[in-house]
Length: 274
Image 1 (cartoon, rainbow, N blue to C red):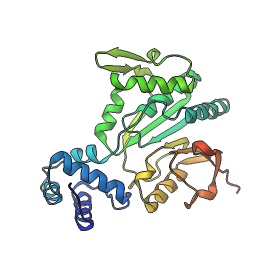
Image 2 (cartoon, rainbow, N blue to C red):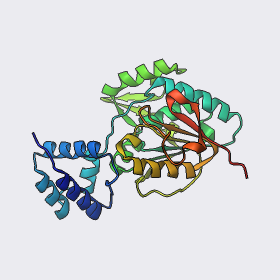
Image 3 (cartoon, one colour):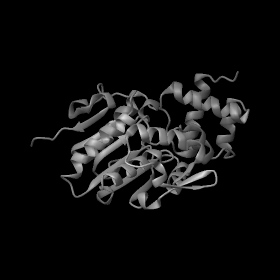
Image 4 (cartoon, rainbow, N blue to C red):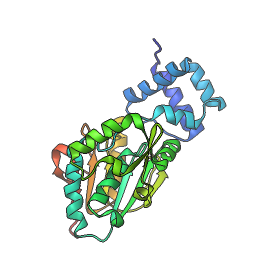
């Protein structure tokens, strides 16, 4: 079985930073190592060969990001979370003329599609401005195309039914061969942006920030930095949603957030008193 040593992993991380401009130093080491091992096994090469291919440019940035990022997602994943989000948006929609939402680490777009369907069912889509960001421009292009493999629709529909949506997903998709095409009017106001959370700086203010099942791939230092970034991009009273296995209790911004739905890892930024 292929394995990789600490020094080899460090050398690959350095080469990636120097060649591609991506710094994986503060990614969770065990997760990052698993992804590198996967690259070695798929390509049937050694760590030394991978290092050389990165340095000489025969292993491209696009190839690397495609293999290193985890793009496993579902529409209406964790239906109870989406029920909570429906309640939050219902309350928010009655008091705001505009709802700004950031999906950080949007992957292939299924979470974004879920959000836009929910907003349409609440008659709030016209109020929404959505940013969907990811480090991988190829997966972003896929998200923007809004094409879902037919083989995945059963689990999407099952989640949607458990969420108790108003319709069937066939109301929002059209079948085309082995794929389903999303109604493009749902994502007309979605801005898909290539963004590396390691380097990102505050760029706007949002009412809702979703970053679910992304922080688990970062070590504590990077998690803390990214959570501070989110806080700086949130209005007072804004909502932050993270993954079920993720936590904010230990981080620098913990005291500025209040649990809204603790079991769903949904938090609200406290209103500052001046």
